[in-house]
Length: 329
Image 1 (tube, rainbow, N blue to C red):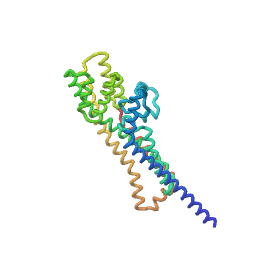
Image 2: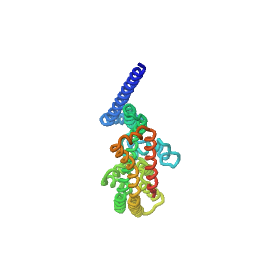
Image 3: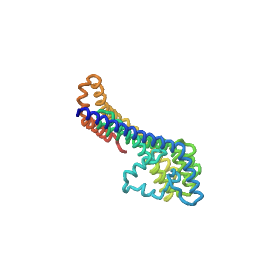
Image 4: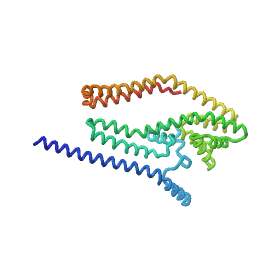
């Protein structure tokens, strides 16, 4: 009798837990769909209204701004080497990734992904502790995606810079100004470099000082080569000198840096392959053992704490190998 009541109580708890998981998953799905619909169809309409209100009311319209009209009052604090918090670094990463999304929206998407995954795994899996790493992985996935987009965009910008510097050099030699040369690059280059140079030229056309527009370009992209360009052009404008020679030297420096980066990638390819093999080998071995001798594998599956420890060790080992082969230059 007592066993029957205990079984009924457990069934009731599982039913409530399942209903709660379904409720949380439905809420997360509705939030995700609502966010997508807002970004896809409604946001542009509200931006038009905000711009009209700002133009005819004389005040500053609330809400997020684009890269062209964003607030540059804190540019010095953003580009200084003083204290930079975790939120500032995350905001900078989202901005430099080129994704037209607010940083808070990225965290909301991560929560909408991680919470249902964690709840479903915790409700239906025989190892409830697996819900913690699964939920964390789902929450962190949008942040990892933003970082991957940021690195891919920075690499593409670096690959476009030598040709852009040569184009600017020829334009300046033909008699155009530096701003005109940058506008030429914006018109004839491809994205993302053309977009960044176009924003810089439009900011100057709207009255932003040359120094501030260049510093914003360097901060917005996060590319060291563009930071070097900013410093070189500002020094050349204040102290004088041959602008054509400056651009020619910058083009050579960027090409040499890209060549060095390629050599570093080639020399560290063995270490990256070892990291991949050492990370995937335990997983592949466990899957093979589970398929060939399930009873032997169940000994490990009955101890979820060991599984969590193995996963943490795998992650730490992969990060450590990546730290070794990640050569800064």
